[in-house]
Image 1 (cartoon, rainbow, N blue to C red):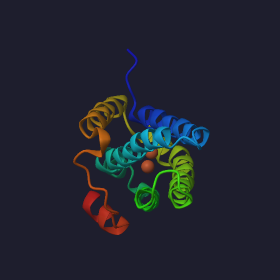
Image 2: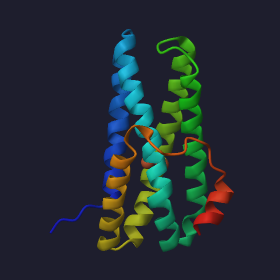
Image 3: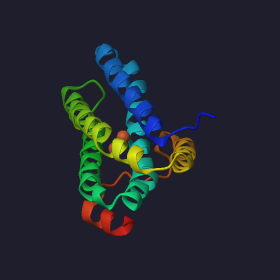
Amino acid sequence: MQTTRVTDLIRLDHRWFRNQFAALEAARDDAATLTSLWTALSARLEVHAAAEETLFYPRLLKDDPDAADDTKDAIRDHNDIRDGIREAGKHRVGDDAWWDGVNATERANTEHMEEEEHGPLIEFEDTASPDEQADVASKFAAFEIEHAGARDISLEDKDPDEYLADNS
Ligand SMILES: [Fe+2]
Ligand SMILES: [Fe+2]
């Protein structure tokens, strides 16, 4: 039987993010559509980062202690993404300052997804068993449903060293 891998769920989210940023660009002159798209996209970015920090990176660290540096990089990148979302949130949708926040979020996210796809996702595929992949996948999917709309998750930046100390 084909089992689900958390690394594939993460890639699927990444693909959705790329599409949604493109959709934002296409809706440039339509504030109502921008508002809908950004509300969903920014919330999903937050939930995705929180799901990775709660479920994926702790498991990667357990399987592969060499992943410490990549994990700290990921937390830093997640903070940059959160900062961009917070900046956009201070401005009216469609204003130049709002786009600055959105563009900063997109830049941070694009760079981060590429790093994650070339590092941590491959490392986990190399070390995790099929059962472990499937176990983390089901928890990841449930987390994203439970916290849809960024419900009950912290939007605060995390200290990478503290995160590492707490999860290794
Ligand atoms: Fe990710
Ligand atoms: Fe990430």
